[in-house]
Length: 181
Length: 279
Image (cartoon, rainbow over all chains, first blue to last red; front, side, top):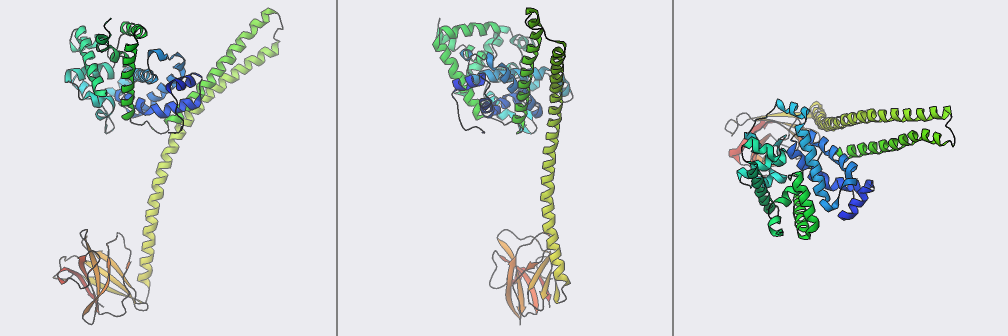
């Protein structure tokens, strides 16, 4: 890490809001790895994941003014920016076209996880704890969290009532919380 | 409100992970304001999530940080241009207040300044793009250059070995002793050569063919002096043509090689006699 000093979350946020370069460098050194990990689990193309991470940090820099600590921690805010950017990329036309020639099976692959150039990402990050969930729970988290489908879409695709989708996702999330402890 | 039930309903997790719908989000944010214990439970989950994410990382590519900071610097430039543009836009309105009208050349000057700025921004994008691709190219070149350099070093060492070997072979004082395989020995293909300097009495060995020894064994060269074996040193089989310098032998009628335990033996193991050559 390039920076030797550390900040409290409160200090860091106010420095970031005043556009402090050093604080931003610190932010990058500390969080680029974990954000990159989540991105690469959604956008499984390694090169592309780097581009998404760049976009995410520029967005953080642009939007830091609107970050509200009352609604959640800084990391949570950044994590959601990263996930949203990744899912946008996943759904973009150019990405879909580039994936067409490769594999895009409809159903079976949803719970197969992803791979990046020989590195099996099933065993890092959140996917590692996903493996411990029951299959029906795992599939739902996979398509809701990593593929970004809405509850309504999942209900239609999986042919389960909307209420059941919600309950199952919440149950799965409660399980995840236990594993995170 | 039963906060315990609410906390264990999964809403916290779906809110934090961005899976809650807008109505749920709004409700949750309101609830957090009125119930500190819910807010606390949210923070606990956020912290465990963050800690987990910190422990399970894959690093992005190394030059990404500089790329991002270059892009942010460009953003800053644009912000500055934006403020200059709005300043220029305000100028005519000052006119109407009747203080001082902007004269013709001033207006042209302002317009020219804006145009120049826009051109320079455009060039910034263009050059940054160029810079990025050159940077990539440079990285690639650097990698292949390093590879070539190390390859070159290997070749140089080999060449030096060859030169030295040829030097010995050309020396008119050198006696060359061919040591073919011992017909009763373990390996019929074995072949080595001894170069023996008749002036200095230095002995150099070249291994043509010998099976690779096991890890705890080593080959040992013997000089036969009046029917008695004299140790001329142990050696490892090197790659390439390099001559191995052995012990100095003042007088001998023949040379032989046996396979011995690592470090060599005092007397040769005759069953493991691989090659033999008379002077």
